Image 1 (tube, rainbow, N blue to C red):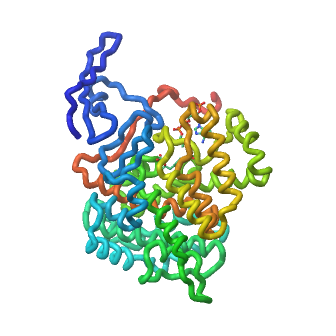
Image 2: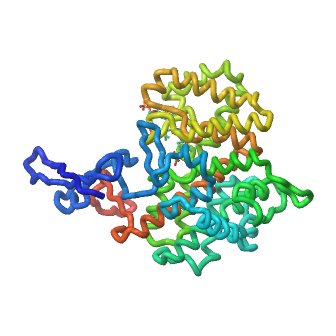
Image 3: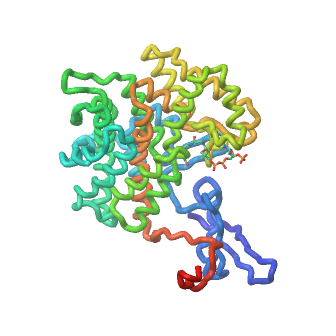
Length: 436
Ligand code: SDX
């Protein structure tokens, strides 16, 4: 972080002493005003619920320009990564800062492949759940439970422990998600197969059965690999901030990632892809494209509490570049699978067109985000709606780990402990119950 030659001066109308605050520049994006000494010097806190104007950390991993609709992983535009790389190359990039060369890619892929199995005891965690448990409930439990098997690598301050935990989590998430799926449909678990690529292995664990050979469909594998890349990281979003705050206590990486899984589940965040597809199915059931106008009216009515799921974003005030790539993947997959007339895809594109011409959305800069089309692709390749967010968690695990490791690797990091504006009761005495 580079000191700016601009200073911020904070003055108070009641004549309290003014204070100069340093301003710092990053390599790109908004400057920051360093308020770390504010409370010590003024006895005042800043107030920013939802952190709309707060940089919680320095990071070199992912940069988003919300106005331009630009997303860079370690400086590489998401469009180029989604077209020229696969997910494990992207994992290597996010974790190490550079794309792997051929040797590094082979070694990294080999390392991940060798850690795809989970301890046989893990299946007994699943048995504790009802078969109809939501996969995100299962995943929150399983990921947290992983820490019970790896006491040899839970010291987050040890770089080797951080590295092997990263490999284990990236490698085992597909196995756990597939197990959660198989458990829900009452089918036997399918073990990983080391001669398959990461996405092909996941496809086989999801859709194969012990009764017959299974060859993953290349179109499905490529679509999943792209879905993983698009969801891999996204700077300081809610679940990543959760992982950072959780990890700042020094807890083990598995527990911190489990906290991220739990946060991602929410419909305002990773749960939006499930909510967006359910929304499209509801509109389809109530009449389809002809009913869009009525639905948009409900969304614009604040009292309805209805949002256009898959639209809007805290940072993007332009089209989410991932949504564009996801829409492309929609076309490819639906055409390849002979589903080009998929009514939900047509409905989604009609809804997008109408919303982007409606001043309510345009004035609020509400554009489709990554979740608007991802559900249609996943549904087309046979993934149940309830598993969408678990797949988002699978893909985001590398981003969470990279961000966690970046924080722990920063000698300046402290345990996160925000303050508050207190507006409750001031001190008062307890009265005997007869007087209450
Ligand atoms: C993800 O942070 C990340 O980077 C997240 C993510 C990632 O990769 O990690 O990108 C993944 O979570 C994508 C977002 C998925 N969520 C949804 O699609 C759910 C629907 N979207 C909204 O809930 C909302 O847009 C948020 C939560 C995404 C952003 O909310 P903000 O930034 O707090 O904005 P806001 O709620 O203050 O909205 C501003 C205005 C409000 O209207 P007014 O009060 O100004 O009249 O826009 C309206 C909101 O009511 N609005 C919407 C809307 N989103 C915002 N109105 C209708 N439909 C919507 N989807």
